[in-house]
Amino acid sequence: MERRRRALTTGRVAEYCQVRPATVFNWIKGGKLKAYSTPGGHYRVRLEDFRDFLEKYEIPIDEDFFAPPGNRILIVDDEPSVVEFIERALSEPGGDYRFERASDGYEAGFKVASFEPNLVILDLVMPRVDGFEVCRRIKTDPETRGTKVLVVTGYPEEVGRAKECGADDYLVKPLQVEELREKVRNLMRRRAPAAASRRG
Image (cartoon, rainbow, N blue to C red; front, side):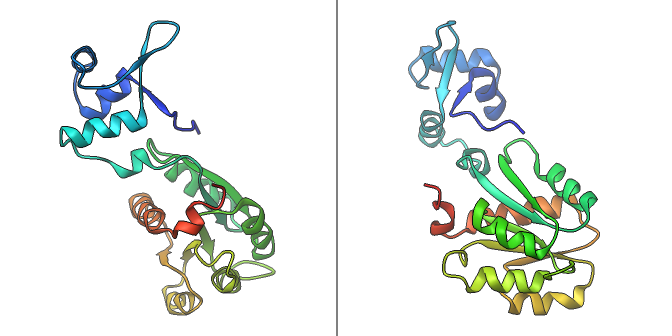
């Protein structure tokens, strides 16, 4: 997936604001929108300047669009098709997530330490170490307890136990794309400052 650039083209600005590119050129020429020129003569707008512009002219701000790069999601599931479904669903414009996979709870423990995810999407029923234990370990370790955990299960009756282990939210299979996206967005917004800045 393409990583979000720190500067925007005039076309991307026009798309966001739902105006014609010529309007963006007029904003730049008129001094309303700060921009710089590339060696090839194309205008680029820094993200921070674009946000200032939106605030000044009271244009709605999409926080997902401005989220810093490096939003790391660890997907823990022993079914490759489920992992691929989740990655595809979250690889939407403006998502800007980095993914890592683990196929069981034992591997998940290593990946939580090495990848330092902001969010773990965790299947509860897995071989070796189950999702309940993985969740409990994440939430009781001072180094990782700020990490958000979204559990996935085919058995609604397991949700209560998952919450007792510290799960922040849950999804019941079969997964629905929009519900998945919305829950991930909400959890990434709520993530603890320590978890958000561990890689500074």
